[in-house]
Length: 340
Image (tube, rainbow, N blue to C red; front, side):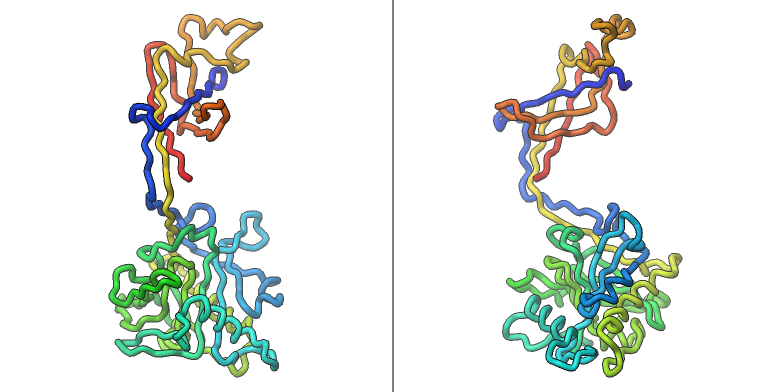
């Protein structure tokens, strides 16, 4: 099969008798984690990063051990406190306070004084927050709020998910729409009515109320009086990684899909019966002549389509899913889709 491969070319034009179709603003969803995975079943951190200066502000979470060549940061975890509690620094440069006000500036309106969460129709404003911040290259344009779920385990195992269709979704010109995050017990299936956090889908940011999580026993007890910055950051990470230890429990893993809107051109390339029945590949010939086994029935296998402009400049290359047999008396119609 390698003896007679062929690359065909096409010169698409806008008025090619309907052979070119333009698709604009098409919604495309993809798996949200490295390796084309929609589920993060194991979470890892880097001990060097946690111990570094940046570890006081956030902890990076990887999909595999940091010693692996394919290790990549999926998201970061932070703890913020409006008063700076939990920071080991005695001066005004308190990491937990810096984290809180960083996300307050990013996510809240100028008139909002603190983060608020709804608890059984009552809005509460805790003095601190947990934050998950997903890498931009993982979420594309935004996180799909219909697919975002994760598990937490303190002394109880709970599944948390965003509600894409909810009266508690809030629109804001600053960040788009934020969606409520609710929970249910994985053991009993009982839904918890509190809103434990919010998903800011366009920004790839999740905020969680530590007080609600602590009452639910979804995280360990927070002691800001004695804890250090990295210790407080690691509490949420420990709850995430602990929930993933039991692979047999559904809903314990983190799932996330990314969405983006793309423009596409679709080109239909017709290979007529009289064309591309011989190959320019050197292996098609022997001593300057076509090999004997191709003389009686000259065949090729189409593997690649190149798209060229009017100046004969190569613009894009497409590979077919499997080689297409081409010989005299047969035709091929190849659909090429270009996203940009």
